Each structure stands twice: as structure tokens, then as C-alpha cells.
Length: 516
Image 1 (cartoon, rainbow, N blue to C red):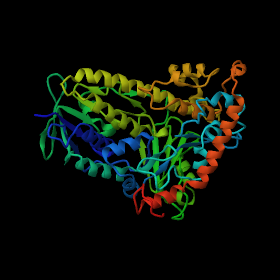
Image 2 (image 1 turned 90 degrees about the vertical axis):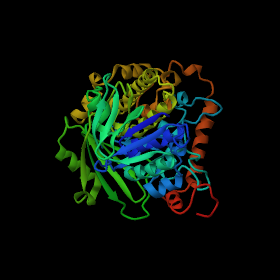
Image 3 (image 1 turned 45 degrees about the vertical axis):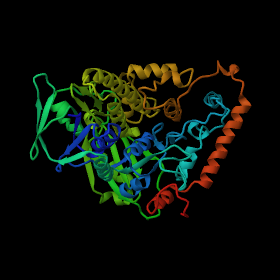
Image 4 (image 1 turned 180 degrees about the vertical axis):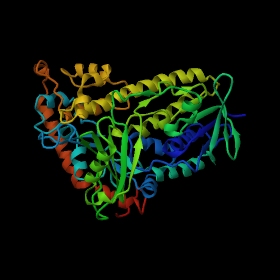
């Protein structure tokens, strides 16, 4: 008998994992891994607008999702990064009210690192995100990252997507079944453990006991397998990340041709922040906040005020979460993926990215020879470091803010709430900028460029005065900065708007040369 995987739980994490593993592990081949996904009809999906990393393009291509189908079926739009408003200063307290974390890497002219020259003032007065690459200025003008003639998942600017999570789960389900996944709609009533504490099977209401060689827990915050049944502990990070509540709403555009934002817009509030995600026909908007610093009623008023005139009548949904993760995610013959593994908060869209990472590692570490413990050790060590590093990156957005207007922000900048590992990084960056020595490509889901965009967008000062005399390529740097501005003007003039490119994909596929 061949190897068998049982995935419990659907949604984006479950079906992304199922469709990806089906391709990577040969579910449609005679000697491949047999994959079954069981999901309950009674458990809904959190249907807020969601954002992703650029890695999602490779993942979706591997699964077999056509890019135009993604746009047509899931209300998807193009995301080129995140825009942060009022994170550095409270409204009215500083000249700089926003910065961006674009997906495009900083431009390097003939290998020249431009960041030291910008720190010494040779890039002009604009922020690092504007002088280092053309993406911010293009995104500010609502441009798309690619042309209609570019093939699927290819464009001159780096990008990801915003989409409707419920619709994406449906599209992934459809493609997963095509990839060879067996789909069961049933409710798991009991998780059966054997004498050694491994899973022996799951009892369902209509299909009896289902068993497998490897079980994947995609049951969300409930963590029915790894948490409730196997008692693998969950490490809370509320001492670092204070937000534990969210209120979400959907808001149609005032006009069908309103511009679609090319960013996730994150606007800081007194006790948290608001996300604003533009889909094709509506915006997904939500307020993430700390219940230790403000009550639910106040948070809802903040959200409705942000929504404007339509806010009073908008339907809202309340969510609770506990920022944290499991230090052990692969325990015996069960792997936690998605929310059952961990969740920090919606900031920087790490949720789906971690599901992608998990699916990729399961495919690479799948115990074909039956050695689960060796695979589990490597998986757990890698995931633990990924969570620790991502926690530092998310906290960076809060802890170097200049805001002191509420207890929420004062508590966030207190050293007691900042991990020692992040304090160490900040100590390094007093006299040199983040570089590849600070990043481990095997575990970091954010590159040194991401750290740089946030660090200097928040106004961090790196003193390079002692090194200034050793920098010799000042004219080359000035020409490179000028070239970035030329590229930005070219992108604005030649790339379609986000809405125009989405409209194009509603009727045809990318890579064609038919007139838009």
C-alpha cells in the first residue's frame, strides 16, 4: 500500500496544502501519495479580504491555478506591498505621515549598494522606499505591476495578490480535486490516539474511521488534532504583540471605476491599526486592536468612523485571536499547518505565507522511508526559527515608533515588550544598516530589504559618519538614484492601472496580444 495523507480542515490553508502536496507528491500517479481532505460543511471560513507574499505566485503556479482565473473567480487584485500611515507619528504630530514596504528589492547599479549613500544624504530628501526602487511611486499612482502581454505570474515589478478568501478556498478545492485529492465533506467527531500518543485515525459522522500515515491539522484556531487531542502546547506572544481582537467589514466602491489601491493600507490608530484591502468590487476593511488598551465598543466606533458615511450601516464581524505559535508543529505523525500552527496578526500578511512554507517543507521532508522523527526534528527547528524571526519583524513596526499619545504605543516602545533578539539587531543597526549577515535565507521570510524599508520608513537613524570617508562612488550613486526616478516615471507612463489590468483579466488570459 502506498503512503497516505489525511488533511483535516479546508479553507485556504487546507486546500493550498492539499493542492500543492498533490502536485509535489504525485497524488495522481500510481505510486504517488494518496491525499484525502475532510472538511465540515458547518465550519465557515473567515471571509475577509486577504493579502499574500510574492511567493504565492510560485505556489499557485505549482498547484495549477491560472492567473486570470484567480482574478475572475476570487475578486483578486494586484498587491505591490504595504503602505503604513501614522505609524511613525500620531496624526498632526509629524511631517512624515506614511511610508511603504514595497516588494521590489532596492536597485543595485552594477552591484553598488545604494543604502549607505542615501544614509549620507546623496539620495536627496525623499525616503528610502522612494529613492531605492520605482515601485512606491508607481503604486502611489495605482499602477499595476505588469502588462497584459506578460505571461502568468510574470511582471517587471514584484507583486502578490489581494483576494476573497472564501472564493480562493473554492478555487483551490476545485483544482485540488483535479490534482488527485479525494474530498470528503464530513464532520470529525473524535481523534483516536494509539498507545504511543500518535494519531491512529479520526472518527467521522458519515464515513466512519479515516486513517493515514501522516495527518495534517488545518482546523484553524481550534487545532482539533495537534492541540485538543495531542496536547501540543501553544506559546502566546501577547507580551510582545498586544493586539488580540479584530472587527471586519466589507465596503463597496462608491463608483465601479474607482481606483484600486496597489497596497495593503495599514493605518495606525490609538490602540491598534486598520487594514484596508482593495478587491475588484469592494474593499475589505478591519480594525485590529488590543483589548487590554481599549474596549470593543470604542474599537467599533473607530472602524465605523474610518468607513465614513457608509460606516453606520455596515455589517461588522468580531474576531478574537491569541498571537503566538507552537514550538512543536510536527508531533509524531501529525503536522499543524495554518492557524493551528500559529498566528501573529494580519500585519504583513504572514498567515498564508506560513502555510506556503509548511506545505513546501512537508513536500521536501515527506518520510517516504517511514522515518517521521528525523523529518519532524528538521521541520520543527526550521518553523521555530521562522516564527521567532517573523515575530521580531512584526514587532519592529511598533517598537521604534515615535508615538507616545496612548498607553498602547508607550507600552509597545518599552524595552520590556521587545524580544532580546530584536534589541540585539537594533543595536547592530546603530552604526551599519541591515545586510545579508543579519538574514538567514533558510528561515527568514523577510529579506534584508524588508527590514530596511520598515526601519528607515519609521525614521531610524544609522550613523555612518565614521565610514563616510571610505565610500568612493558618490557620482555613481547619484546617477543610480536618478535612474530609479527615470524608471518610476516610465512605469507610471507605461503600466496600466490596477483596475484596468484586473478588468482585462476578466475577459481574457495574460500573455495574449489582443487589444485591451
